[in-house]
Image (cartoon, rainbow, N blue to C red; front, side, top):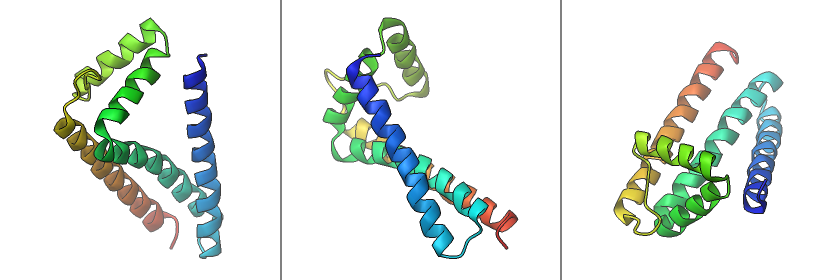
Length: 132
């Protein structure tokens, strides 16, 4: 596994697990059942990862696009091409050589809106069904 990819995955996984731990403890202290606190922590830790990626696209679109392409090209040619094709089908492909700043910011805003909607709606479902 290439060094850039390894560092990125270790950092992302560490932030994900750290987020779950911190949010679970915080919600448990606030009085939620531990299972509900863990479920909410899992949802929001995952959502925060994508929110951070979306914020990076909103604030630094060209740099984030170049980083994503460097990270993707470290996978190796077959996986990199598969990732590019997947992004292209979803409409997320941004050319790192000439990124459209407006399009990258718009995609970042869409990711932020989707993750906030997913986080809030799944939290609401979890709280209304389990935590009475």
